[in-house]
Length: 142
Image 1 (tube, one colour):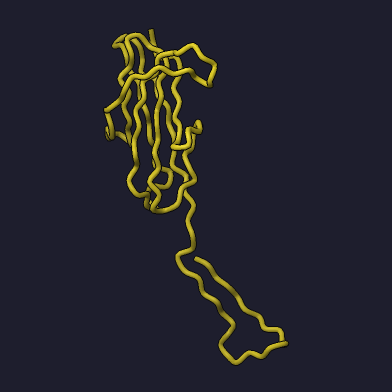
Image 2: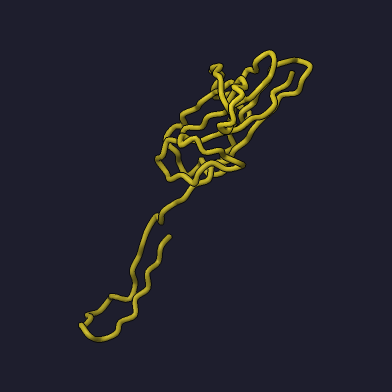
Protein backbone atom coordinates (compact mmCIF):
# COMPACT_ATOMS: atom_id res chain seq x y z
CA UNK A 1 0.00 0.00 0.00
CA UNK A 2 1.57 3.34 -1.01
CA UNK A 3 1.94 6.45 1.15
CA UNK A 4 -1.40 8.29 1.16
CA UNK A 5 -0.30 11.86 1.92
CA UNK A 6 2.86 13.87 2.49
CA UNK A 7 3.28 17.23 4.12
CA UNK A 8 6.08 19.52 5.23
CA UNK A 9 5.68 21.67 8.35
CA UNK A 10 7.86 24.36 9.91
CA UNK A 11 8.93 24.64 13.54
CA UNK A 12 5.56 26.22 14.41
CA UNK A 13 3.85 23.09 12.94
CA UNK A 14 2.44 25.20 10.09
CA UNK A 15 1.87 23.30 6.85
CA UNK A 16 4.13 24.62 4.09
CA UNK A 17 2.90 24.58 0.51
CA UNK A 18 5.55 25.33 -2.10
CA UNK A 19 7.62 27.76 -0.03
CA UNK A 20 9.23 27.94 3.40
CA UNK A 21 9.79 31.34 4.98
CA UNK A 22 10.42 34.09 4.38
CA UNK A 23 13.52 33.80 6.55
CA UNK A 24 16.32 36.27 7.24
CA UNK A 25 20.05 35.72 6.80
CA UNK A 26 21.36 33.86 9.85
CA UNK A 27 18.09 32.09 10.74
CA UNK A 28 18.21 28.33 11.32
CA UNK A 29 14.86 26.93 10.21
CA UNK A 30 13.57 23.49 11.08
CA UNK A 31 11.57 21.53 8.51
CA UNK A 32 9.66 18.34 9.29
CA UNK A 33 8.37 15.99 6.61
CA UNK A 34 5.46 13.71 7.44
CA UNK A 35 4.50 10.71 5.33
CA UNK A 36 1.06 9.29 6.21
CA UNK A 37 0.00 5.72 5.61
CA UNK A 38 1.90 3.14 3.63
CA UNK A 39 2.38 -0.56 4.27
CA UNK A 40 5.15 -1.33 4.87
CA UNK A 41 5.94 2.03 6.50
CA UNK A 42 8.04 4.20 4.18
CA UNK A 43 11.65 5.30 4.34
CA UNK A 44 11.62 9.11 4.47
CA UNK A 45 14.65 11.11 3.27
CA UNK A 46 15.51 14.81 2.82
CA UNK A 47 17.35 16.01 -0.30
CA UNK A 48 18.75 19.35 -1.48
CA UNK A 49 19.21 19.25 -5.23
CA UNK A 50 20.66 15.77 -5.88
CA UNK A 51 22.36 15.50 -2.48
CA UNK A 52 20.97 13.33 0.31
CA UNK A 53 20.84 15.46 3.47
CA UNK A 54 19.21 13.26 6.06
CA UNK A 55 18.08 9.66 6.11
CA UNK A 56 17.09 9.43 9.79
CA UNK A 57 13.38 9.09 10.44
CA UNK A 58 11.05 7.79 13.11
CA UNK A 59 7.62 6.17 13.24
CA UNK A 60 4.80 7.79 15.18
CA UNK A 61 1.03 7.62 15.56
CA UNK A 62 -0.72 10.75 14.39
CA UNK A 63 -4.21 12.02 14.02
CA UNK A 64 -3.91 14.21 10.96
CA UNK A 65 -5.65 17.54 11.32
CA UNK A 66 -6.93 16.57 14.74
CA UNK A 67 -9.56 14.30 13.17
CA UNK A 68 -8.42 11.17 14.97
CA UNK A 69 -7.99 7.80 13.39
CA UNK A 70 -4.35 7.47 14.36
CA UNK A 71 -3.12 6.96 10.80
CA UNK A 72 0.52 5.81 10.93
CA UNK A 73 3.04 8.53 10.14
CA UNK A 74 6.78 8.52 9.51
CA UNK A 75 8.63 11.79 10.19
CA UNK A 76 12.03 13.16 9.27
CA UNK A 77 13.15 16.53 10.67
CA UNK A 78 16.06 18.61 9.41
CA UNK A 79 17.62 21.59 11.15
CA UNK A 80 19.07 23.84 8.47
CA UNK A 81 22.36 25.60 9.05
CA UNK A 82 22.50 29.36 9.39
CA UNK A 83 20.97 30.67 6.14
CA UNK A 84 23.01 32.74 3.69
CA UNK A 85 21.89 34.84 0.73
CA UNK A 86 22.85 31.94 -1.53
CA UNK A 87 20.08 29.85 0.10
CA UNK A 88 17.38 31.97 -1.57
CA UNK A 89 15.28 29.68 -3.80
CA UNK A 90 17.10 26.56 -2.54
CA UNK A 91 14.87 23.53 -3.05
CA UNK A 92 14.41 20.93 -0.32
CA UNK A 93 12.69 17.69 -1.29
CA UNK A 94 11.30 15.08 1.06
CA UNK A 95 10.92 11.65 -0.54
CA UNK A 96 9.02 8.68 0.86
CA UNK A 97 9.47 5.20 -0.57
CA UNK A 98 8.02 1.98 0.79
CA UNK A 99 7.91 -0.57 -2.02
CA UNK A 100 9.92 -1.26 -5.16
CA UNK A 101 6.72 -1.65 -7.19
CA UNK A 102 5.25 1.67 -6.02
CA UNK A 103 6.62 5.05 -7.10
CA UNK A 104 8.18 7.35 -4.50
CA UNK A 105 6.05 10.19 -3.22
CA UNK A 106 7.57 13.59 -2.56
CA UNK A 107 6.91 17.01 -1.10
CA UNK A 108 8.99 20.04 -2.08
CA UNK A 109 9.58 23.48 -0.57
CA UNK A 110 11.66 26.37 -1.82
CA UNK A 111 13.40 28.69 0.66
CA UNK A 112 12.10 32.28 0.56
CA UNK A 113 14.17 35.02 2.17
CA UNK A 114 14.02 38.71 3.05
CA UNK A 115 17.15 40.84 2.80
CA UNK A 116 17.94 44.18 4.36
CA UNK A 117 19.92 46.79 2.43
CA UNK A 118 23.68 46.28 2.09
CA UNK A 119 24.33 50.00 2.36
CA UNK A 120 22.46 53.24 2.97
CA UNK A 121 23.71 56.61 1.68
CA UNK A 122 22.15 60.01 2.44
CA UNK A 123 22.95 62.67 -0.19
CA UNK A 124 22.24 66.38 -0.21
CA UNK A 125 23.77 67.42 3.11
CA UNK A 126 27.09 68.69 1.67
CA UNK A 127 26.80 72.31 2.83
CA UNK A 128 25.51 73.97 5.97
CA UNK A 129 21.83 73.61 6.77
CA UNK A 130 19.58 75.88 8.78
CA UNK A 131 16.61 75.16 10.98
CA UNK A 132 13.31 76.29 9.55
CA UNK A 133 14.49 76.18 5.93
CA UNK A 134 13.58 73.36 3.58
CA UNK A 135 16.41 71.10 2.42
CA UNK A 136 16.28 68.34 -0.12
CA UNK A 137 18.01 65.08 0.74
CA UNK A 138 18.04 61.74 -1.03
CA UNK A 139 18.32 58.43 0.78
CA UNK A 140 19.67 55.52 -1.29
CA UNK A 141 19.47 51.96 -0.04
CA UNK A 142 21.28 49.18 -1.90
